[in-house]
Length: 233
Length: 233
DNA sequence: AATTAAAATATGCATATTCATATTATGTCG
DNA sequence: CGACATAATATGAATATGCATATTTTAATT
Image 1 (cartoon, rainbow over the protein chains, first blue to last red):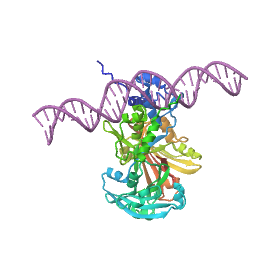
Image 2 (image 1 turned 120 degrees about the vertical axis):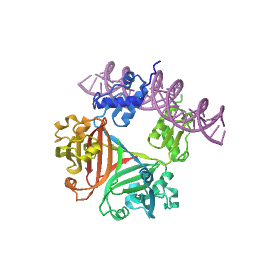
Image 3 (image 1 turned 180 degrees about the vertical axis):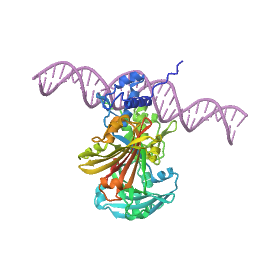
Image 4 (image 1 turned 90 degrees about the horizontal axis):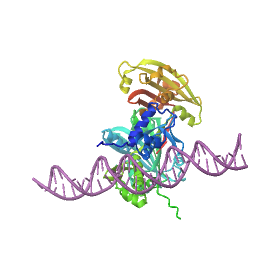
């Protein structure tokens, strides 16, 4: 009795990558059809389909109905950046997390933010400034504006013990967002709270968040000197 | 004759997201089983499976055999950053691309790089410095070290007209890499080639690349002042 | 030769079925 | 009551099959 082990979609995925890397299927070339590959590997077409579909999602091949599957010529790889709550980022480093509220003010929405969020004139936003510490050393300065019309109970929350990031995550689950990374000089509050000299280059993440097409919040997170955001791909 | 349209996995995915957002299934709660959902939506279990699997890949739910599917409490969303070749990034902005080689030297691998790449002592690396311009304005300064043992024909290439990034992409298809983003001050070559004052904060991307477990190259790409890397998620 | 219509085809997706596997729940025995 | 073996079960995955859909290829027509 031979213990015939079936071919998994992972096997096929690996084999396809291997054939691309070893130039059996050079860049720009057309792969065999799903049916041909299924016959070769001795599996169902659906199994080949899943393997190729995942490779297409990774941007390694492109697929077109009737056109077939092709190795892409100029790959655009997608780096997957896991964006967690600051608390978790810090705890994952085995460091102690500490949160502190700096300021909390209800203001008329400034023009630049009004344009960015696309909210009506005269709207009010809750402006927050907070600090996140790792082992009592400054880790991230957070400046945030929340559209009070989009988040009903936000004015009931003092944000004294829980950060707005975590609070919003629980209140507004699975929103969608737009992110921008950049390098900025330390000025004003930043240099104070992150305790660095004026002009020190700092890594900054800006994010605009929507919930069901309603703009919810804009946040500017500035990290301590020397912070690196890392990932593999 | 009623044209009975079948339920797609996208429909189910959307519906599940909706039920999470509307708190029908609050964070941390257990979803019905695939079988129950299939019965409710009037589709096959495989269709529900695909919908839930994709949501799990997005980090919206967690799944465990026998344990069932659960809405995650502290979502870690993954921002997908498309990392293309500089030329393409610039051309996508409808700007004119220009490449210039600054230096090209074969050197003994410095100790820090040896450690980073994990290559044997006394190995030689090709050190390259290049500039990428958009509409004749400095866009990116690229400093790169290539493991000559891992890339056979690299010494035959002068890199006078084609950048090392594009050359390597064609030569070493679909490698895997490790990326780090950070903010650095403009010093030395950087301030000269990007024409900014000393200490100007600059956005930097460092990447180490392997091909089939062999270290191939380490690159440090520093962008012009004010550059932002953007994405949605 | 150019245009248009029809046939062929590769991928995309849904279904029904089966087996595998991890984990939980249950029950037995000391 | 607790430890351990056993059964139950939800997801994971592969197969065979059928239909849908976007394109390309081919044929027909002007």
